[in-house]
Image 1 (cartoon, helix red, strand yellow):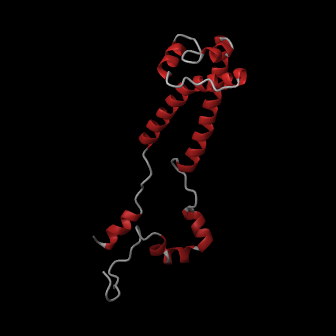
Image 2 (cartoon, rainbow, N blue to C red):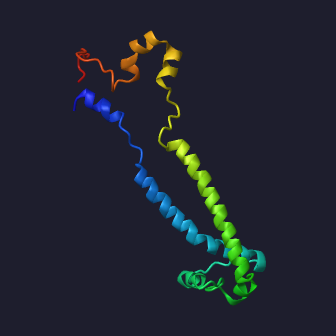
Image 3 (cartoon, one colour):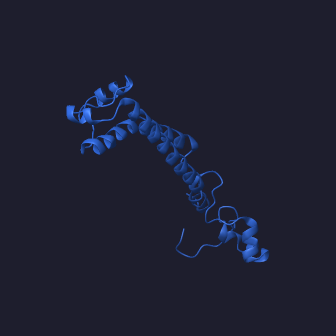
Amino acid sequence: MSMERSRRSRFTNVAPTAGEFTVAVLLAGVFFFLITPLVVQAIAGWATSGTLALPNGHLLEAYGGLLRGRFGVGLADGVADALPSDAVMWMLTLLGEVLVLGAAVVLGMWMRDLTGTGSRHGLATPTQAAQALGLPRLRKSAAVIRPDLYARTGRRTPVGSK
C-alpha cells in the first residue's frame, strides 16, 4: 500500500448514509407511536390507583384492547377499574403523541445540525483560513493542511522508513 493511498483512506467519509438515518428514524417513530398509549395508561394507573398500570405478560391482549378502543385490557381488575374513561384516556394519548412528536422534531433538528449535510463544525471555510493565515502562508502550508490534495511528489524518505 502506497503512502498516497493511506492518506486518502484517512480522509474518506465514514458517516452513515441518509438511507440508514431514514430507516432508524422510521423504526424509532413506529416504536414510540406504539408504546405511547401504554405509557399513558401506566401513568394514569399510577395517578389513580398508586401502581403502574402495565400489562405484564399480556402485551398482545393490551394491544388487542387498544385496537378495539378499550384501555385496561390485560391489567388486574382493580387497576383497570380505576382508570379514567376510554375517551379521557384517548385524549391523554393524543396529548402524549403530540409531546413525543414535538420531542422527536427537536431531537431531529439537533441531530441534523450536528451530523447533517453541510455541517462543518470545527472546519474553516477557505476564505476564513486565508484570513487567519494569510494567503502566502496558506499556499506554502497546503501540503500540511490538506495532504490528500496537495501531496508533494518525489520526496526523499528518511533512511530506514518505508
